[in-house]
Image (cartoon, rainbow, N blue to C red; front, side, top):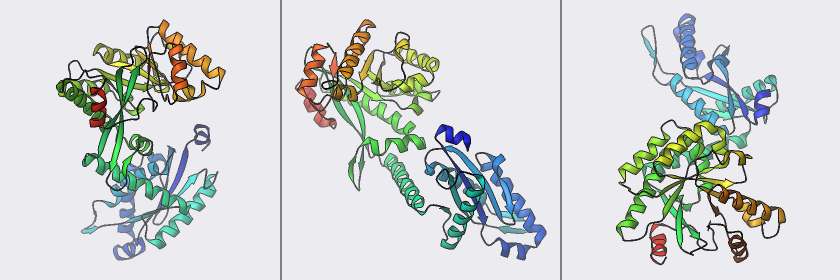
Length: 404
């Protein structure tokens, strides 16, 4: 728990109970009942994330811990996976086949206690409540049950959204400040929820990342963006470069570069005009690995933009080493620069530094004419923001491109 406190993560103590074990034990006899418990324990050890934490605490109950998570839904996933393995195939005891079911109580550090004794007592109370209500698992705090249920419901909707192709790309144009022409677009994922209409990414991207579904959706976004760009060329338009955001989970994958290469090949996008936007802090998580992947992408004529620059690590010393072509100044500095001298100085310094390294600079979140005029004076290369255009669906951005 000390490590979890340092890392800002949580620990769950889970107590599981074999339903109606007393009746099973009485009908089988104690020896076969003990055999069943040993087989349950074997399955639990094979399916539990950290089997060394499992313990058989009394006749029909087991306990274990789940560590290093930030959202309780993650703990529930691990618990459900283990319960499915334990209760799935029937057990063969002697000549009998037995199907079992279990219920579980969950207490979470630090909300439900800051020591093992308190967590154990509260997990036991949660288990008792769950057995009375018939639920498979119950948190000690009732409000947590509702919140986790809501998260899991959203997750199921996300999986259906992937299957039903409910995601779409909207495009926000980038304006070249020297020529006044559209120089590129940023692809932004939207969810076309049948129940609630268009949903912004802030409401579902974190869940996609947490569950790993971002790998499938992220690969789709790159493929879709390249497909749309090819359609613009087929319509006789001067297709701008398309930037697609990359998450931490995507970049960490050993096959990430191959995923991008495959999308380019499948869409026959030559020249492809693909940019990838990666946050500053993400690149700095593993600089050497990031540099290797980004160099390979650069050799494929993929441009790399450092997104939200200025909000992550102090990485100025690495800029000369990183194979990037673009810096995007975070919108928070753009908003503040017209009223805060320090923010103005920061924006000016970044533009000068980037130009000395032969990098282009894009200002994010430009909303006022005053901000635009200052950026022109500072010789910023490009801007994007609601002052020029909000993100637009494919047909609307196509109409806009026809006029520029």
